Image (cartoon, rainbow, N blue to C red; front, side, top):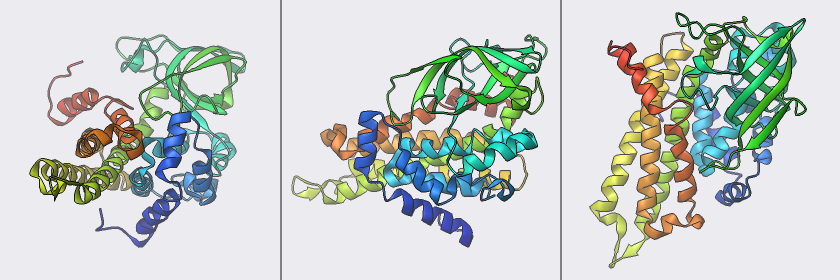
Length: 387
């Protein structure tokens, strides 16, 4: 996307790309291989002030919109940092969205400036192994005990739990009712006390530099002032971050795909087989061209959704559709790039296989493609609810 950017927006993308370019492909390959957090990368963006891209200036941030956050994260993903680089910044930005919209003044003043400076890493605890996509059936409970809440249960796929200081945590505070299954869930922002929980890292396909975990909670304590918004309305507060997160997820996937297409096209121009560049063969050229076109379309839809969000307009359909198409286009582009390199695409030294492994995540998380299609079928096409 080159047209329609303001001078400020162009500078966001330019500066993000410049910072990310200081971290070469070998940096990411090494962090992936060793499963180590990219702290140097995070510090570089913290020092430039970009971790607070969405945080209002009154709380130490930059106070920009979703469009600028999308430009920032797309540029990171497009640099070759992939999901490892994008997620390392993403999880400083988006877990705090419910606090921006519903948090008390105490929570905002105490924690948002620290997040903007990169001083506080946050874990995100919503998903549970027995509930899956049906958040209404989570079994983690918070019991009110005087002036505090005591939380017990289990979370899975909790990002950043190895190093996080605090956790944004959804727990049930009232029994589930069939007529209103998502009522009675409360959102907490509390200290991830290692004496009250155990954390087990999940070995996974990709994005090894940014950890995913199982978290077992046994009497974790949250104060009254650590409730985000209203007791019993936590799921609805969580929604404040879901549409904008889907937009940037789409743009991150697009950025990874754009890197892959550019990288593979360069190789296809230079690689000579049977006395001709392999890019002269339509079996190479057409898949790359098709992947480029699909990425362009997904990118435009993503920024349309971001524009709608920033202007206070409904964007559920566009945000979900952008996530659907961005994830598809990003993975297809990486798959085409891997095929372009042939056997070398399977080798770690070309870096394509790492991005291929990482971008696949976007078709699963933070919401599956099937759940996106359920939303579009029901809320856009007016079809009966199917789940």
